[in-house]
Length: 396
Image (cartoon, rainbow, N blue to C red):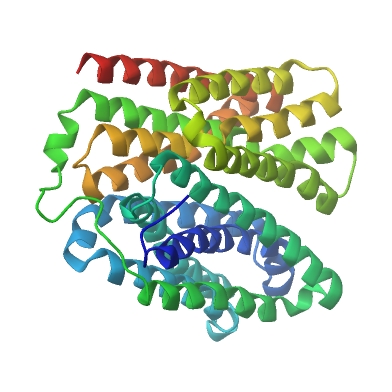
């Protein structure tokens, strides 16, 4: 993957940007039980942190379309990284600075969620604007770095806690805070181009909403997020319940195997994508996702169900970056508004998938397998979206 001189640093900064997002999304959840014990915060309030993080990122997705075009891509992405750095660093002082420790943690979550939301909206179009030879390959490779970041956060944090005990988590928070600070400096010294040429006009929201293909792509993004999170959120539970292992081992066997195989799928397409038809790869991946869902929900063997979780990670890898690539290729003047709305759709899917599984499971005696079975609708709809999108482009 070759880029024009000067943009190599931008590509590396984009890769690190997704590792930053993985850090802010996955580090604090590792400390939930510690927060409960250290600050006497009930689990019911701690779980609200996840909801607030997601809600803030959704709000940022919604508002960023207009604001980022005014402020500019470079200033916005640097600001995003500063927010991530501040949110992680302030975790070391705000919980004890407030009379209510939960409020201090909540403020930190809101600060880094703003940064994480902007990163999600901007990294893909910044990468898309870089003069890479194969956009689909570059996009898939880019999104694999979120997976590697997720794996690194869990592994390195676990090793740190083993070596220095979890009571020293504040030092680790400061170490992770150095990552977004370093990447902010890297972006500051890198060229950042707009995804739409200055001579062209970016599509307005009204123009985007009037395009049938945009609605197809938005549905595909929702299904991509839902297909991914409907299983990954429950992977640890399958590992713990099915294999009877500790939570630490369960996290490594469940979510980490999912993340590793999802990253492997994206890295594979990032390496060989120029020789692979994206539409066919997405349809085959969707079919494999359906098989993994059925294996999880219908297999009588806990080990096979866990294997289905790992297989699901492999199958969903191309869905999110593939949908982004198809959007960039199909709507040339989509601009910030399109990428922000697609990110919003992906986040909605990330919430809808686990929510559907939870509702159906709860209504049937906490039967997670039944919930996963009904969630198979998401990869099925994604396959239909890819086929219809291809027909629409051919017709146009």
